[in-house]
Length: 289
Image 1 (tube, one colour):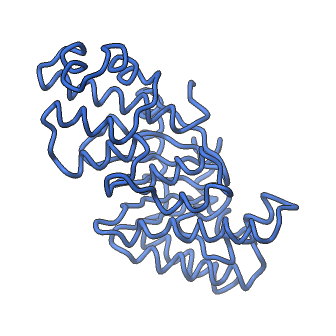
Image 2 (tube, rainbow, N blue to C red):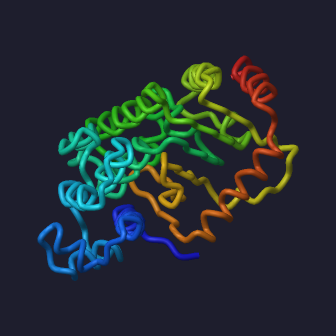
């Protein structure tokens, strides 16, 4: 299974593919496109193959040349090139660039611009659904010896990520959690009770679906580890699988990988408890925590 260790490489390749498709839809050769924007043909080729980075401003020039004016599509493509959707600023995570490495920044950027996220978690509550105290306990355990100030910055990053669930429109989140996630005592009984209570509140939102894979389900394909599948508005070809870690991510970009993970997620959803049954189990475990 092939992947890249840095999200930007995935985004360059996928962005290049989309720009090539838009160029062809406009009836232009790469040479004609280069002439329209005043570049050498090789620059257009490098951008389309993902071998060269491209700024949001350059993407905007190409989109102008190709007659692409749909605002959301332009905002997404410019964001994938590294510019924010507002046309040149940076995302909120830019303020934490000294704390979180580029791969994690890229993961957050993808999350911020996705329309849907499907996630399997086998050990901890998904980052988007964590309370601050729970996130603090997870961070301390994962990064022993890290200064307290750094831990608090990472906790603030986790909390800030949750804004995508309050956006307009909000991110659609489908989460499948192994029962072990609910029963593992992270941060102590008090922290865990509050986390499970908050998880129930998140699960009541119409755009959040939480399902639990009970121990009784036995072995399942996701036992090999957690993952997130991001989907984007307008452009299904930009969908990507991310294996999310605390401060970095591994990305899978091949279509066969995407199809395999999507199929695996559907299977796990089918074997998991319904959202209603899952909420009952979460509440029961929370009462006994």
